[in-house]
Each structure stands twice: as structure tokens, then as C-alpha cells.
Image (cartoon, rainbow, N blue to C red; front, side, top):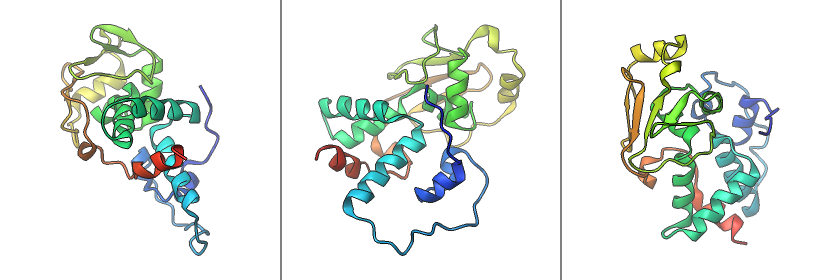
Length: 196
């Protein structure tokens, strides 16, 4: 797994993202010094790709793979790609509210805290399907971290997911559609960049 050595707030400022998107509660009072400079069409498309990679914490190789798979699927390529990114197991754990950030969700999955349909999964890039049941492993439920989650209320749950904090179990009700995805990404620009 690649190590990200960049400062999160600086990266958010460069990509013109709200830090809350990645789970950071801090606000930066500095502004980017690039406001007056005109960005080319290629630069705008590249920034959209970098923004999507940063939000979902994926490498260039993984991101290109998701694009290639989405291009072969039926439907609109950009929406298919975002749907694949949303269906990653680390993102699903984040969306269920079990983790505060996608990076924390990735670590929890890597440490084998979850099962999908009763089978242990420790791969953050695992793609879930409609009907999959994601649960905390039985031997991990007594962990202090998961005990705290049982007492928390579920807020801002996407309609394609369901989570029961008492049993620490969630279900993928349907595949995410574009209107269910609230990220600040213009996917058509990424498709234009890759299709050149």
C-alpha cells in the first residue's frame, strides 16, 4: 500500500475541497495563491481526477483500473466509475458511520475487523454488491471502539445502505446511483481526460 506523505489541509486547499469531505474537522484560514492564474482545460480535468483520487484514497493504478472496468460496463462511464468507488468496502464502512474517515475505515478493514456475508475480508478495495451483509467479526465486537459505536446515533446514512448499531451489522440495499453520491466530483471531466 502506498504511503501518502502530503499534508491533508494543504491538499484540500490545492484541490479546492472542503476538509469535511475527507473527515477533517479543521478549517484552514489560508487561501490558495493560485486564484489569479488561469487554468487550462487539461488542468481542470487533471484536478478533477486528483480530487476523486484524494477523496477515495486510491492510487493512480487503482483509479485507472476502475475507469477501465466502468468503460466496459453498460451505461454512463463516469457514473459507473463513481458507483465502483462508492462500493469499495472501506468507503462503505465510512458511509455507515463506523469510521470517521476513509483512511480509518481502510485501517479497520485491513486489520480484519469485518466480514462480508459471513466471510472475513481484509481487502479495503473489495467491491460490495447489492444484498451483501457487512458485520463486525464476533471476536472484535467487545473492542472499546465498537462498544462506543453501539451507543452512537446513525446520521446522514445514504439510502442505498442500512446499518444497525446494536448488532454492528449493515446491509447494501441497492447499488448507488449518481444522485445518491454527494461528492464534489464532475466525473465527465475525468472521462474526457482518459478518453484522449
